[in-house]
Image (tube, each protein chain N blue to C red):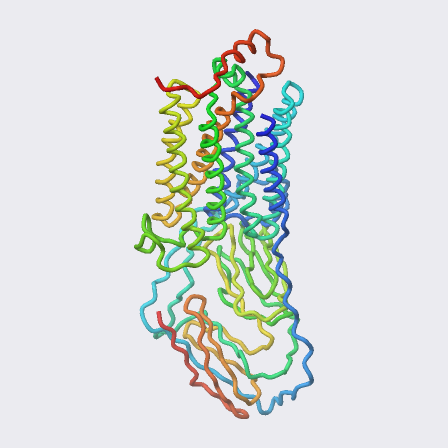
Amino acid sequence: MLLFLYALIVAASTAVLIFAGGMVTSTQSGLSVPDWPNTYGWFMWTFPLEKMVGGIFYEHTHRLIASTVGFLILVLAVWMWRAEPRAWVRRLGYVALGAVVMQGVLGGITVLWYLPDPISIAHASLAEIVFCLTATIALVQSPAWNRGYRGAPVDDAVLRRVAATTTAFIYFQIVIGATMRHTDAGLAIPDFPYAFGHVLPPHWDPKIAIHFAHRVGALVVTCFILATTGHVLYHHRSRRELVWPSAILLCLLPLQITLGALTVLTGKHYIINSLHVVTGASVLVTSLILTLRTFRASVANVAGASTRQDAPYAAARPRTSEARA
Amino acid sequence: MAAIVKTLSFIVLLALVTACGGGQEKPEAASTPAAPPAEPIDPATVASISGRISLEGTPPKPERIKTTSDPTCMAPVFTETFVPGDKGALQNVFVYVKDGLGNRTFPVPAEPVVLEQKNCTYVPHVLGVMAGQPVELRNSDPTLHNIHAVPEANREFNMGQPIQGMKQQHIFSAKEVMVPFKCDVHRWMSAFVGVLDNPFYAVTSKDGSFELKGLPPGTYTIEAVHEKLGRQTQTVTVGPKETKSDVSFMFKV
């Protein structure tokens, strides 16, 4: 239980880190600290607080949070290495540790190479993966997951496919969004919901194409989220482990679309812009949790679980999806 | 579940491989090849070109910039894009000889030109320098600055000056008009540096005037560059010892 709570904190801190990273990009502060891993020659943790002015405040704060999250993930990986009986969960910890280290290196490289678009986009995209990994670890440490959701997890192949596809599309949409942010295409189409007063942009260039792709992506993702949550609410209304993430998704979706619209209409206000980033990450992770829960039936129970616990789970495992009463 | 772990691992690896695609370090522009000996300039016949840059229309008034993100930036800071001059004059226009000097080469001064960070602005806002000549970057403020040059033909650089009184030098290797400078700590700070292969350049003062002295007789393309209003060129011919003082450019807002 303690490990689960710790993993939850790590996942939450990763979300905070993504928001801080969004603030760096939104305030265009990415190069306000020209060196890395030091800050103006100071060791990161000894940099004077009174010197955190202007863009340095955002960039240095991001670095401090990133270092903290990196350390938290290191502790998580070590803790799971010592205490976690499931090998694949331990491996998740190692992958998360490797990913966050790589994430830090990408962050450093992007500063030292003056924010090249591919590196910055990779940095933003890998951040989502790190968040997904920490959230996955927290999920599989949860008592409900380990109990197999009352011993009878939902086994619905259709739901698995649609939920996994939704998660994949959300991730792809976030990568397009990161591309849009880092290629400075966020206001390439300056109006909303139209594009230059039309449904389709009357003229095109690469930035307009990226921006428009993000808007189309939002529509596609909306359809998939509605399909997934609709399926859950229609076929599995009694399953709290699926209904809750569905309900959260249905709340986050309009919020995220509104934030996206406001980002354009406010000329990329830095707080709205950053909230759009972290809400997008939250949509992704919520969809991932829902997806993973649909796969719970195909995952072996926690290692070391008693036969008494496993037997009813195996016996009760339904062969087909629940039929709605 | 092992499949999920493998899939996540694959995605992470894919992201890393994508990320390791290499940087975008721009190649240093090749320096000008050695030119064949050109006719030396006879000091007894040199001419000069002078004139005035003016502005048609009403430019936005300089606005006071909110500098509260750094409490040490207490002196009022105003936008410098359009600095009002006398009688419609336009200040901070870079004027230089773009063409007409043939294959002449000119000695590069060893004395640096100074770009100072003072009261959380770059001083001067526009300046010229010859390729190969040092630019001395000074921090006269009791706060941190980063000096971030974003050239196209030269190498981009970003250096920090966290301590008041710090000085660093940078040498541009290739001709480039203009090289934008910015400070990412204080986003309002900007400067523009014209890097040339000749010493014939000027920046308009408050009365919009400029003067290019010491030119050998000939026909020249004179270009005037403003950070917002773009570029204008004129062809001007000067004879021996001639002073042509009626070269004017008119920018429109």
